[in-house]
Every structure is written in structure tokens, then in C-alpha cells.
Image (tube, rainbow, N blue to C red; front, side, top):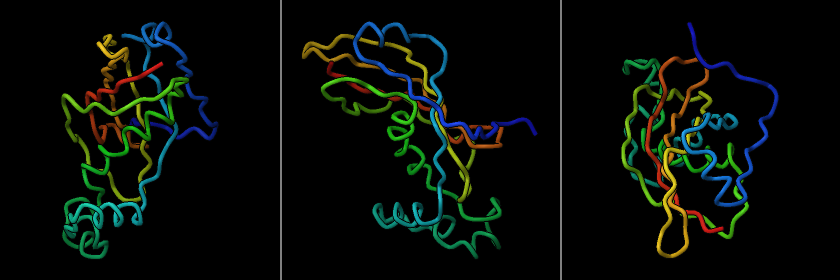
Length: 163
């Protein structure tokens, strides 16, 4: 199976320290972060926090017996919720602050099985100047699953950065 390979060498985050460095990344090579393992404890905490305790997520025995996935899977929205963390595993901003501004598009092409490792591949699609001095960045994000050919999530994520 062709897929993503897990590298044992830690990745060095790309450093973006000013607007020029941010603009230089538009349409460039993907910025790829480190892996994050999604364990059952994380899935259980997410289920508790959101009230989404469907058995395909929180009942490993039943999920092994009855689900088409062969075991428990993470919530799609859990995968979506870790995108900021995955981005910050790939990029270090030297700025005053940044905020999550939302999403334009989201899809979940493949399930995330409990125990799988995820990482984000992020491309700066657009940078726009905002009236308050922020730069609004639109990221094309692909959340990869180690060893899988299909991604867990593809999303257009929007952030605002204040340098």
C-alpha cells in the first residue's frame, strides 16, 4: 500500500516572523508537521466534552464487533478540532497573537482509527490585509493518516495573525 511513512527524525517548524515571510509562502510547498497519535483517551475526552458518545467512538468492543471500521474511530469533529494544534506543530509564528477565524470547506475522506497518527500538510493559499492590521490567511490543510493513502480531513482553514 502506498501511503505516508513515519519518520523518526523530529521536524523543525517553519518560522514565520513577519508579513513578508507569510506572503512568500503563498502557493508554495506544503508545510508538514509532526505526528499526533489519536488514542482512546483523547476520543473519550472529546465525547465527554461534546456529548457525542456514539458507540463507534467510545465502545471499542462493540466497534470491533459491529462497525465497518474494525474498531473505534475518532469523531470527524475531533479530527477537525486538532487542525490548529497540527498547524502549530508545523509552523512557529513570531507574532503578537493569532486567532482562529473559521473554515470555508471541510470533508472527511477517511476514518481515523483509534491509535492512528495524524499530521497536517498546510499550504498558504492566500494572505489578505485586514483593516485592523491583521493578516488573514487561508490555509489549504490536508490531515494525513500514517500509512493510509486517503486523508482523514481536507479543509480550508482561516486564521488571522497580528505581527
